[in-house]
Length: 293
Ligand code: NAP
Image (cartoon, rainbow, N blue to C red; front, side, top):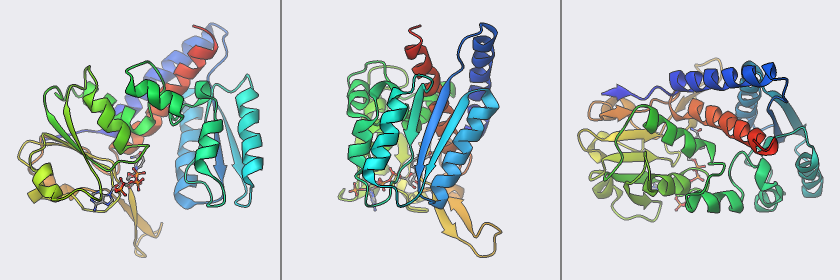
């Protein structure tokens, strides 16, 4: 069994990007600039945005954090989005989700200029992805594909089962795995909360991508010997015994499932760190587009 080590791989990718930034600087060109918009003080969002900003600094990108109060109105947020669209120094930006309930997320995502949409959530980019055109691929599924590519995990002709159909993980990874290419060329089954007898489906899977957010959902008796297991789930389980007051776990019963898997991602240290690395890669792509190279 091989652990798909997202921490190690993401550090390698960040080093590659840092080397690229160093040569951009040497040429006297503008370094990539990523901005993040955060509304409110959701604990998990603060952690995610914080590590995105720190990663930017470490690899030599410029970064800007727009931290707005919880009571920011939809119009105020749309004004910030419009300013970021117009700011020539910003190559790409993200609006951290979830947004407070009084703001229409769809309206905000549609307002992000597709050329700066490094999260790849705008319909123009999502559509291009589905049509095999070059574009920003949502960072989490992009990270999974990069992991499969660099570990040379065979996907062609395999039966891949994706659990979860969210717009940011399940749906896009099901499209990417079924695309022509390497990795790709898999036969994909997409499961969700209305799927009947999920166990019968996962037991037939060569590759399972679990993205539902239920701790230890995927048990050993749902997996066949030799399956490739990608655990996207991140759940904070309250634990007063720990300093932080919680611990993080995935969707997979790692201890038991890893006995049967050929490859498996740990949580933490699997898909999570890859997500940040791929966001940085998308920002580099945005900068290349803006500078017309
Ligand atoms: P989401 O929007 O809540 O979607 C969850 C999906 O799981 C839905 O499609 C839902 O089905 C399905 N589902 C729920 N219960 C189910 C069940 N009992 N059987 C089968 N399917 C079920 O979640 P998300 O945003 O995709 O995130 C999923 C998990 O990944 C979360 O733990 C999140 O924190 C984590 N995540 C991690 C990263 C990373 O970087 N590693 C990035 C993003 C998200 P319906 O559509 O029918 O409701």
